[in-house]
Image 1 (spheres, helix red, strand yellow):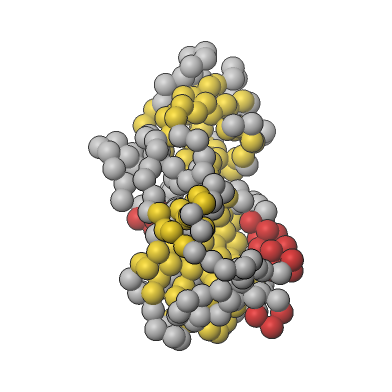
Image 2: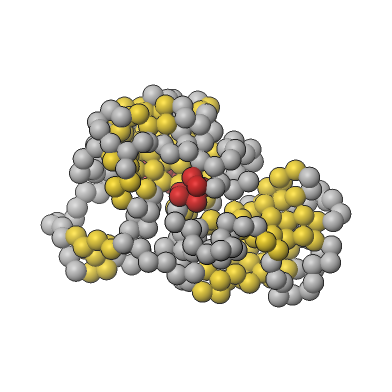
Length: 281
């Protein structure tokens, strides 16, 4: 799905402010699209005890050490962001650095849906639990390498699908994940290592998401799996890639058996496909 000769490569970026005399600063992908996760890797020439800071569109994102005197920040983008020129600001590595990035537009599928009444709403309880999952920023990095497919069925709905409801375009809506079709009871596995921080069940108030599992992969990256027919893990469990966590179902607001996999980076729903195809190492 990734286009462009340089996409996915890590390249030195061009600075808009003072030259990077003592600092190596890299960005990947070099030509990101809406929905991509942007990795900013920094390596000061002189080791320090204080991590640099990285800001985009007025929001500061967490920075974590990678080892070897290198640091990384992961910046999420979404289908409802404005494409075009972005400036990533980096401080704490000598003179402030301003990095120009062009966030490319992207065409997402569009659905036209007619609904009666108010539709199927969720409960305050399930929304509060899911929001708490998205806000977790653990210092540990549990995942390693590219993420795996959490289910083996075909992709039935892509990330980023936009919708018209009764002829009116939903400005703030986009499909926040990837859906996999599959038979009732087909296995769902963890795509990467992490800690189970959310187990939500229909009987406890997860009426929209259905039976759900949330995994903290560390450093602001987390996954949610919804509409499950069964759950095979408990909160607090550590899971490894490929470990079964549940089974495909149609609980909650679902038209049939499927798995919805959502991936969050610093609280925003990003496209899981680049994480699955190449990872961020």
